[in-house]
Image (tube, rainbow, N blue to C red; front, side, top):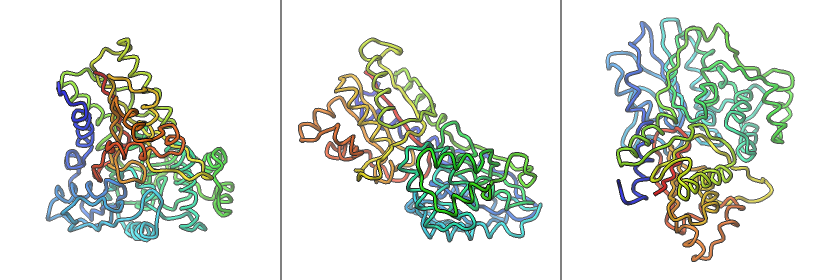
Length: 428
C-alpha cells in the first residue's frame, strides 16, 4: 500500500479524470460517414478534447465541418482543430461571445438533408455556453437569471429546467432544428443520474418538463424573472419539444463517460494498493457543508468502530452538491469541493486516521483556479496556528481562504473533461 496519503489520494483523482477523457472512448463510438455531409455541433467544458478525439478518428477523405463551443482556457494545449471551428466563451455566466457563437451554430442546421449526419458533442458547461435567449429575452436577462440560480441553492436539474425554457436552443430545440438529418449525440455526463435531458440542458433530447415546472422552481427559490420571461413561462410560450416529437425520430445518444465509471476507476486503483474501496453513490446532492459533515461522520465511525466498513479503506462518492449564498452578503473564495472539505474538517475535528480529497473533475472548483483541496488530520490545527477561524470562513463561504494558507489547494488546471464532483476519504 502507498504510505503517502496525499500521493494516494491524488492518484485516485487522476485515475477518475483519466477514465473520463474523450481520447479514451470517443473513436469507438463513431459511425461510418453518411452519404451526405457530416456536421459537428457541440458545447461544453470537454468540447475541445472531444473535438480533438473526433478529428483524429474521422476518415481524412470524408467531409467534416461544424462548430463547437468550449469554456475559455479549455482548449487542449498545443492543438487547434483543422476541419471544425472551435470557439471559446464564458462559463458559468454566458457572455456575448457565447451568444454569437450559438447563433452561428444554429445557422449551420439550415438546409440539412436526410442524407446528412449531425454529431453533437455535449458535456457539462454546455448550458451556459449555448447562449441563445428565447424570443423576447436579452442576453442580460439570461445572465441575471443564471447568476441568481447559481446562488440560490437549486439543484442542477432544477437550474437546467429553467435554463432550457428560457432558451432558443436547449431542451431538444437543437435536435429539432437539425431535422431531417440524423443526429448522434456523444455525451459526457456531469449530472446526478446521468439524465441526458439534464446534461447541458439537453439540447438534443426531448424535454418532459414544462414551463409551469420552470416557473415553480423560480418561485421556490425566489428567482426574479424579467417581465418577458415571466409572461413567456406563464403563457406556455417557451415550451420545449416533448417525448414523441417526430422531429427527433431516429436520433441516438451514447454516454462516453459518467461519474460512476470514474469512481469505479478510482476504486480499482485503490484495490491495487491493497485497500478496500467503497463507492457510496455517484449522484449525491445537497448543501456542500452538510454533505461534508455526513461523510465525516461515516469516516469517523469507520476509524473508531470499524463500522460500516473495516479500515484501512477508501470511501468514494460523486454527484453535484450546492453552495447556497446569501446575495445580500459578499461571499469569499471557493467552490463546492472546498466547502465540502471545510465542513468535513469541522466535523472530523482532527481525527488522526482520516484524510480526504474533494475536487471537480473539470479541474475548476466553482469559479476559482483550483480544482479542490486536500484535508489532513492536522489541517484544523495548522489553520488555527495561522490565526484562521475555520467556522467563520465556512460561514463566509471562504473555503479557499482556509486551504490556501495551508498550501493544500489542488491546482491542476483544466482537465478537458467533466464528470463533476469527486470525493475520496482515506481511513488508515
